[in-house]
Image: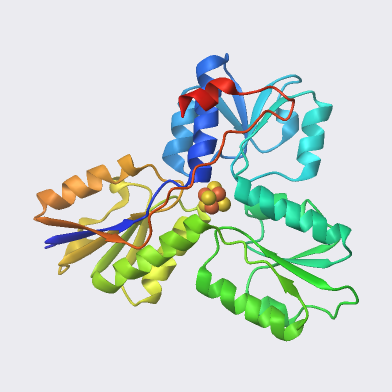
Length: 316
Ligand code: SF4
């Protein structure tokens, strides 16, 4: 049975998720419910259920929100047409889009204006990709894998490449190589964010020393799913779970060293019961595996209707 637990550092919440959660938290504290959120505020089942219990209504369409209602856009960002529709319905909007996602939107918008065709490397249908695609839908092609690059047509316009922020480092490098082969003069921005990068490097270092890797995160969390894939790519048994309730104790049979990490949308408290349970099963040594120290903090947003959120600033 396990005797050692390795904890990836960094793991769990990134600065963009902290910001989005703080914003919704503050709005719920000071305004009457329901408060609407466009898509899941972050991709974590426990976080979303907690906010739902406090009076947040998660919607996938703007017309589900009554005119004049308060709505918070999620960390994953939204397409300009969503912003426009919210304006038309006179919704009171707070945009909790992660600034690193906003940066990709701005790059995409500028590239389209400058006459480029855009290749958006990312997972088709993911909230972030849908939002970025909306910046220049007539000019943008989503590329989900290196295999898809082969089938892309020749271009008369120059090619500009942007990426989803939460992709696999290794897979994205392959896709970008394939794009460079096909379009040698393509201008490439690799937009995988610092948090995704650090968590993947940490799980790799962790997996090299572990007999089993557990990743806490929801199935729709791109960066959590990638963490499990990175561990599995090193030949280690690796499972993604939403929490301790999804762990099968049989996974621990014959395992001496367990590695544990969590996606960027996962509160650390979800790991506590797993750690306690492992101690009860005989773990006596808990060791951090540190690859980076994160100090990134994002300023809170201003409502796009111009309302300052001073009380949110004060909470930090
Ligand atoms: Fe922002 Fe990266 Fe966190 Fe996404 S994972 S919210 S892009 S910091």
